[in-house]
Image (cartoon, rainbow, N blue to C red):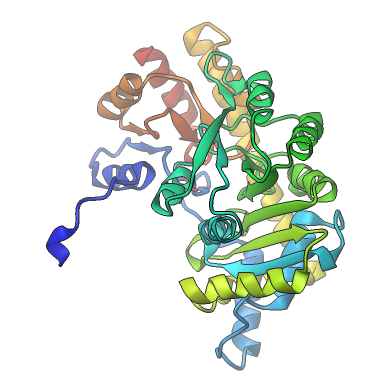
Amino acid sequence: MFDALTAQPADKILALMAAYKADTRTTKIDLGVGVYKNAEGTTPVMRAVKAAEKKLWETEETKSYTGLAGDPGFQDAMIGLVLGDSVPRDTIAAAATPGGTGAIRQAFELIKMAKPDATVWLSAPTWPNHPSILKYLGMPMAEYRYFDSETCAVDFNGMVEDLKTVKAGDVVLLHGCCHNPTGANIRPDDWDTVIEILNDRGAIPMIDIAYQGFGDGLEADGAGVRKVAASCPEVIVAASCSKNFGIYRERTGILMAISKEGDKGLMQSTLAFLNRQNFSFPPDHGARLVTMILNDADLRADWEAELEEVRGGMLELRQLLADCLRQETGSDRFGFVADHRGMFSRLGISPEQVEKLREDHAVYMVGDSRINIAGLNKETVPVLAKAVASVL
Ligand code: LMR
């Protein structure tokens, strides 16, 4: 039976991680996978997470199963963090999932179950795992224009034109903030235009929010998803706690489905059913830490403060990189790096130039020229700028 298996396409981001690991050059710079790293190149456990873990160890009395949709306290805490009070709680069904990817997978399964012929529209480009999972599930998908490779900003006119062609019942996947892989984001007012079009077309927004707090702050980064939640009759939200709580390997995420007209009990039981079919009970350790942090004033204040340090550090690196690139190239070509938000920026250089950076300078970035800003520090920014200028 197993001899019928064929090799599956390698995930580009994970393949890059392996290539970086195998490189023996001591000067190598890792700008690949979307994991936050501090100036020393490590991914620390956040202070509030450590404190919550200690408390949990002291007080936890059982590791028996939680509910199929996870702990209701986690659902409430995450709904508060992501959606605030933009929409009545009794219109939201939610289920904990293994990470943000788990939430996306369950969301796609939900769409497939509700409307198998719905086309899921993805931004061009998007996180490569979005189309990969859709393809695996055999679901129809299409692309809307998003990134202007000339300006390295959002092609909002193109996006609007394309969204005006979506059909009733189609799903439009939007990035809540900190667009992955480009770092280019729509402006606050643009959300109103997108909402108007989707409502006009009868399309359903699905929002992937994996970097809340990494762009312009927790509140500002949640503003788009809140507007959508308040204004559209049906909304799907997939949120990740991997990055903003730094608990990548704990696999902590949540799927939320808002249905203002529908039967919420039915939606809640559907999400629980889908969890049962795929993995039964969701992981709880990370979810419990998140719940403790969000519900405890001191832990929450410390978490927010550390998240702000992380965000501020990335903004400084952005500005420094934009300045160094201006100096090295003698042009404003890379000025957008300072305007982008989140962990990523797409530099807009060719795959050959990306390859040359890897071979000649041990600089590892994704083939589409996506860099992880957090992979840099004040010493490596000028090195990167010089290297980029040398391959242009
Ligand atoms: C990324 O885009 O690098 C992250 O979301 C990690 C991943 O799983 O791809």
